[in-house]
Amino acid sequence: MNTNNWTLDTAHSSIGFSVRHMVVAKVRGRFTQWTGTLQLDEADVSRSRVEVEIDASSIDTNNTQRDEHLRSSDFLDVQQFPTLRFVSKRVEAVDEERLRVTGDLTLHGVQREVTLDVERGGNARDPWGNQRAGFAAKLSLLRSDYGLTWNQALEAGGFLVGDRIDIELDVQAVQAAARKTA
Image (tube, rainbow, N blue to C red; front, top):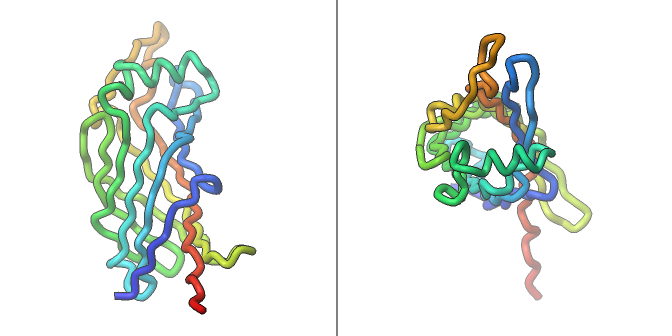
């Protein structure tokens, strides 16, 4: 097995999301604190693996009052469920540029299988000798599937918060340069 270990570079990556607000528009947000690792087998991507852990309290929608509400027991309940976690179970090559990564997402204490559509961005060596790889991924999920059901009916019809959450990841992974021995 020719697997290389990579660390997800959170300084050059993002985990963002959007959700309908009042039916007419979307609110966008991101998580600012998270970690992840990638075991990548270029010869056989099916032997690859990825794990990501997100600090739920790091949710940021650019509105302090809304962020506090999202951290509360109405939504993420960060006191009881401090992390979101994704652990892959399968990685499949769709073609040379696209992968399908299936794994378990644990959110709000509920674990469900999800599949991410991943686009490979390529590889490059940085100025410090580290190998880097880029990936972009998309996923949609229903927050109600994870017990996130708080809402308010609107007078004109519909609900304050949409059920579908669209997630977009732009990830840069780094593999440290091999140490030279004397």
